[in-house]
Image (cartoon, rainbow, N blue to C red; front, side, top):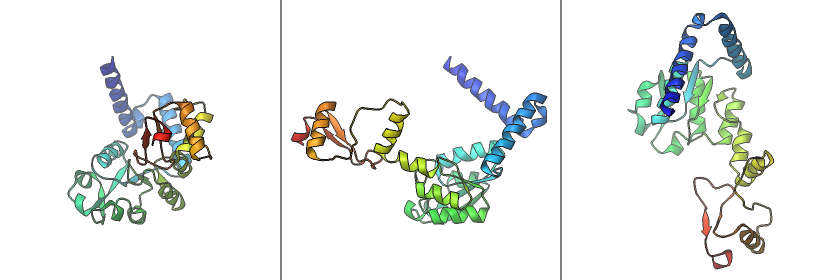
Length: 225
């Protein structure tokens, strides 16, 4: 059954790509629906994307480029000195050098990425994942510069990046969350009481920590830390 589903999805995707290239092949009603969806998209974004900058490298960038090509969108690659001969550089319609191998001087440089976006006349930036994809300042910078950030708005990145805030938002929306405590009172006594209520083992997590950073497990009890 799973294999059948995969095949079906691929066939639908292939059919959709054919519609994009040859809209006239669509039946009249579906052709009208396709045009309406395209018009709605162009109105929502303010423009129709014809060129996208992929602010990433390697397999991540290659996947985005393949999809962009299927949609008839030109791709712009960026690369550091270490990635000069990488596949994503060859796959792109154009590629721009952005600095030395250390990511802080290349893929994490908002200034360099934005400069390439302007030089290449890209209407949108796809951050992939990692690097600038979870940087709310970069998402906001794109908005200020009139470039589409293909990702969540800066406010969502901010709220989801703070564990206590994101948990409150999800709980308010009725989403099941793991039991815990993230109140303002962070005294030893308060934390001890809540740890006892929840039941050991518990884990202390930094509200702004990410990727498993600042996780402190307590197995025997808070007083035995």
